[in-house]
Length: 187
Image (cartoon, rainbow, N blue to C red; front, side):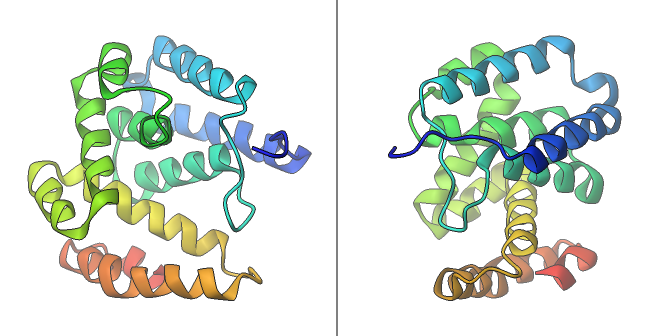
């Protein structure tokens, strides 16, 4: 990575606000130990320069928290879904293994990340993972909703078009089939 990743003051404030709302929303399903481990994992990635902004300039930690908030408040996921959203990048980017995740957070979280990881490989595997664990597809839909909200006013028109087409042809029909009409209207 060419440039050291930092939070803007606004991003730091948003992050703390979302964390507090997530703590309240997931209640006692999310333990102090879970939060400690997540903070350690994110800190490790931060000090080892394993975090960078995406093509839209989005902060990946804040983006993951926003996605988790959508998954909790608008879809109804809880602990395992939140942790999977926050830790999936560390597995996809090779900073942790699924075994590491399973040891720290349990088989449920590792199972969801495995499904999310398979999704990134191809669409056929997406359908397989969907049949194995509904939370995988719900997290993917929450992620796309968050992405659409975040890039609404971007100047990156080609990338914005790709995300919009993907949402329109893949995620909106899935959300509709699942009865997630509010989310569909935002895609």
